[in-house]
Length: 110
Image 1 (cartoon, rainbow, N blue to C red):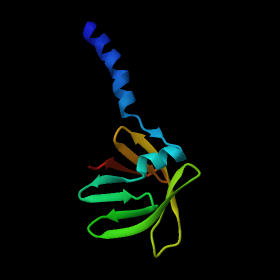
Image 2 (image 1 turned 90 degrees about the vertical axis):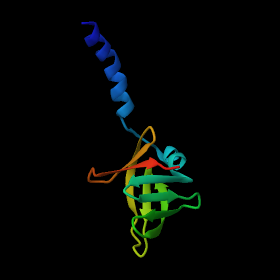
Image 3 (image 1 turned 90 degrees about the horizontal axis):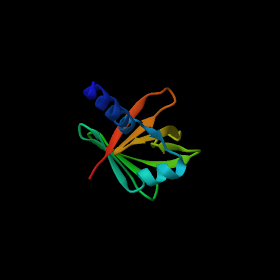
């Protein structure tokens, strides 16, 4: 019985540690500016304070980023269309959520 009680006491903390929290505009800027996210398998992205972003997936790609209405938005030339995402965070993991509910997770890289 004591083991069961101990598990119940630990379990809520474990679940809370795994939850993602949606960031507002200022929090998105603070979470991304000057950072590099690692998406795994050699794919990464940087977010410069000049609002330029570099994405690497076998070859480099350069674009722009902004925060609009509490969402991360990016523009990848030659397109002139901005794509926007909700941003969530859990510890060192940043999650981008598209309008359809699809997610992409990146972890802060060193």
